[in-house]
Image (cartoon, rainbow, N blue to C red):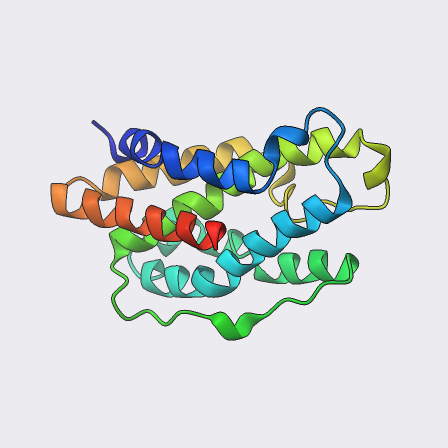
Length: 184
């Protein structure tokens, strides 16, 4: 089984807990509030601030080009999005690269990239809600019309690179670490 399939099945419980903790079910029934959205962004900002740079540093050598890492850096957009809502971005929580293998970094990026994929759906749904008329959704629409191709490219590299059982477990551990941060 490919690692992308394993990640989806083995992290489903944590994914569902994150969605429940962030009231995601209310996004589509027009009861999601600006405060709910701010909480959603703050949790994603923590994940980005803590792990994005470390994951990119670890992967930049061998996988930087195939992953097009320079196109995936979301910290500045997240910072801008938070500021637009009167919130602060805290880069001081940054994790160093110690103990983060390439497979673990890919697991972390699986969650970050997955939130961008799901974010496209979130942005579309919330943009129909009058309470969000002044929200830009720059983070959740990060790739714009390239969301599908960027996700496909990520999964292709992930599946080609993470093949050994040890690497698969490290990748799953990285995804679990990222989901745990979102649950923080």
